[in-house]
Amino acid sequence: MTLAEINALDAAAFVARFGSLFEHSPWVVERAAALRPFADLHAGLMAALHAASTEEQLALIRAHPELAGKAAVDRTLTEASAAEQASAGLDRLTPDEFARFHALNAAYRARFDFPFIICVRLTDKAGILAAMEQRLAHDSDAEIATAIAQIGDIVRLRLEDIA
Image (cartoon, rainbow, N blue to C red; front, side, top):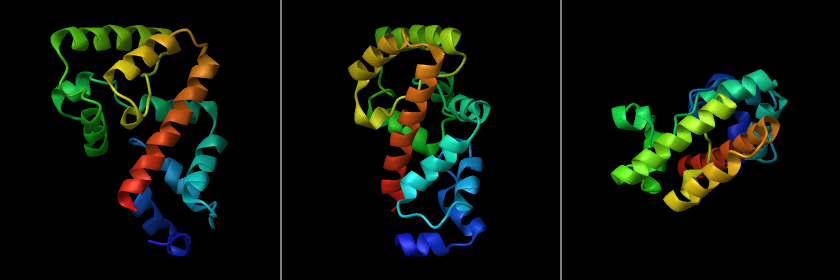
């Protein structure tokens, strides 16, 4: 689909096409529909997210699953999240790796009250674990900003998949 065709979609068709880009949060795409026309679709989607309140951004962050967490074990991840986690090998963890992810997820959630967000398609298990440890030292504002930036990377790659 060309950008001109995307910009010409009615709001319902726009949301139907792109509503799943943001994990369990079609409201971002609904708001972005009103911001069209876009010169760059990803930038327009992210503009809608950046215009959201901190509480709305936190709701989006909290809509994401923990990496190698309960949803992965229960197989209740969205199709996109399952594929993304598998691409980094998170579906094939050793018992020691699983325990490390579980401990870091718990420490991260205790510190920030939301799950750790990283674009797993741009790294590997070792990189994810290192980032989890490093980002535990962030303050809350820095970590919210980092999570939103990582969501931007996730959305960019998801857009490339459906383009």
